[in-house]
Amino acid sequence: MAAALAALQARAADYTALRRDIHQHPEIGFQEFRTSDLVAQRLERWGYTVTRGLGGTGVVGQLIRGKGTRRLGLRADMDALPIHETTGLPYASCHTGLMHACGHDGHTAMLLAAAEHLATDGAFDGTLNLIFQPAEESLGGARKMMEDGLFERFPCDAIFAMHNMPGFRQGQLLLREGATMASSENIVVHIEGQGGHGAMPHLSADPVVAGAAIVMGLQTIVSRNVAPLQMAVITVGAFQSGVANNVIPQSAMLKLSVRALDRGVRELLRRRIVELVQAQAQSFGVQARVEFLPGYPVLVNTAAETALAREVAKDLVGEDNVVRQTEALTGSEDFAYMLEAVPGSYLFIGNGDEASGGHGACMVHNPNYDFEDRNIPIGAAFWVKLTERYLS
Image (cartoon, rainbow, N blue to C red; front, side):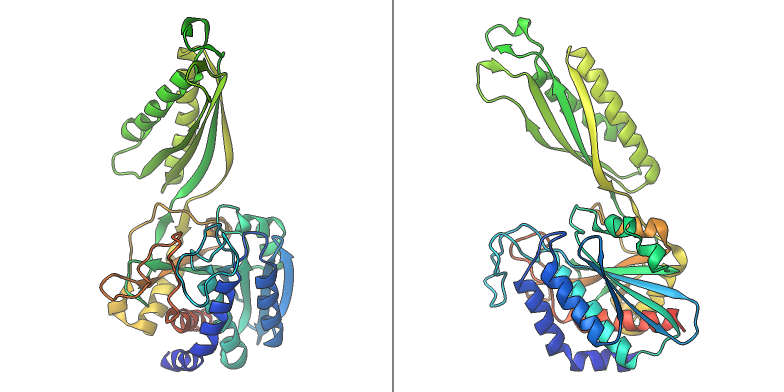
């Protein structure tokens, strides 16, 4: 175990330069042209069979060794966010309004570092599929790759992914069996009333008043319909209607973010939102329509694959640096789609905490965030040893 980590640490400067190059040239979802070129060229140089174009800009590198029949998938995301970087780092984004504020540059660098080591020194028997995914950030790149035939063309018996996690010690590995990240629903409520003069409200059907009642009523779904020990969130992030103080508008629109850690609770929320919106609208004499936009399912880690990942993590960084069953997160991840199709596990690597100082504690999706480069050889060594353990 130590040999792989030592070899990767010896080349840490190269991988850090690679990560910072990707960081300096961020690309939004489905526009990762430069990044996918970089990934594909390196994989080809190391002897992988490379397939491009899945999910638009997705890349898959395949390496087959020996006669083993097992097939392993490892996934990294490549896309950046529409955030203006304020870190002031010498390798800060050169694209105004775009930055790698979630560490996908680091995830890509970790998997590429592992890819090189596995191609030159890896000892495994079977098929390795390295999946470099576009558009994780709310655009469903995982689902798009699957729609383009990812698992039909590159079958996997197990699949794994890793994400950095600010607020935990740098290099600490965190795992969880079962529901690990919440589902995410993007819901729009369209309310159609009858506009009129603000001084004569009795001649109108006010969509603003109806919308306000719906906002307040939605909160009772979590407090009165969901079991107290279950997690659920209904957030109304936008309420849009009207432009003048003396005009009752014709329509209003609510935009909702809805989360759950249980598939049954997710379906309950969807049903009760529709029922409540329609009932409230009727009580105010307006019409309402509930629109469900694409979201993400609950991310569920399977038991056997998570147990394997725990053992690899313990061997790599030691029991004291492994959280065996970390808390679930209310954030969402489209890797959940892949886990609905293939057994696997999604784990976290600590990006740094306040006690250890440095920039790693800054939360993701923040203009001051940066990935902790010391995690590249650790994450890459984890992928190497997981591959060798699974494909043994």
